[in-house]
Length: 511
Ligand code: F0G
Figure 1 (tube, protein in one colour):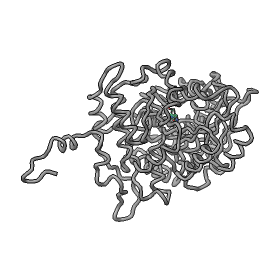
Figure 2 (spheres, helix red, strand yellow):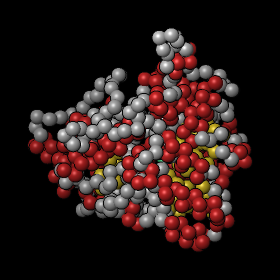
Figure 3 (cartoon, protein in one colour):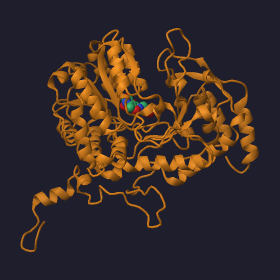
Figure 4 (cartoon, protein in one colour):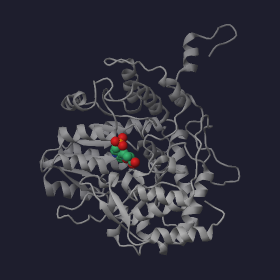
């Protein structure tokens, strides 16, 4: 610090302006801040600087929109959506430092300074030396699957993600999931539902033979089971097992921010550590780490990092082939600058606590109205249990998909089906009935307010009261792969019309 006799140095001025050190310099960055009354309210440790006007179109317009979207929320025009809770991917709010950094991007095809800044930020978080850029998470999956998955090989994972599984299957591999059965039970309460069952990992490895395993994959903040975290203890145990067996261990860090929050707040041995210290302990447990920067780092892009140069060399040729030159990998350099700052900001407890605390608040509001949700509340968003919500609708008629339609009709809120509709069909053509039927209402980072969540809970509470009116869906156009993106469906019967009539009767003054 400067004193009266000593003028401030240029280094100190630079430090003040330094974009990437905002998180670590913040004196409160490690402590939860609570209310004197003890009331549990997620307190925003940021202020809004730029906003986007929202519109709630009337229910007749919504009915026409969802019908022309083939009853698939992916196919809705966003202008017909009030609260877009489809995903947290690429729609998180950015910080002023991210916005500012975008202006500093070095727009060169090869050897861009931006690449090195992002590589340094990754080193700050993960301690890794090597970085292959890719345009988003699934692009990393394409590169990893093409390099390591061979026909008839296996990938053992805590739980699959849709695009991950598709890439593994496209390369002739098969996915084996090893979370315990209890993790698929939305009512089962435990801190780390994303943890692998270590006995199952060992028995499945023995069953298929370790030489046939392309890699073991741990997904942070396990998406499809409700954004459920993995403990550091479990990561350590899986890493030890894979090292002993000589099996490659891959980490999908897309949802790491939420997972870091849960490790720091729920795992006894880790509570005293800083967020960054935890991240730096996680990274060396894995051979390869990849991420979607549409989630991690609150921007748009992706990448693969590792300290193993041989593995990097194997994957490297695919970057210029599918993505772009090695120093941008299909990303805009502006986004790369934003990712770099976003990654460093991920080490700030207040940045990563926002989503998890909002998800819990949303789940509390929904459950107060009787709406069944996945518990414990995870990261990413709240997950409504359509299995229980619509237990009168056959699973083959896509309970969670039907619920997504009903919620959109009643509220203009767009959620995402995460159940049977999101599964690939069995080889014999029958539906692969998902273990869970979830309607995910994503809560993009720092984007929505508590009053918007109250509105969500209020309208979905109404849908719950009228759930008997809701029926199923059937495909009218079904793509062969990742059918949930473009598939078109029709209502089984005229239940949407009945639901709309009841809405108008119950809420005549509302749209
Ligand atoms: N891994 C996980 C755990 C993800 O959640 C996602 C994307 C990806 C990989 C693929 O990344 O979209 O950048 O290609 N999840 C988004 C979602 C699509 O809505 O949950 P991407």
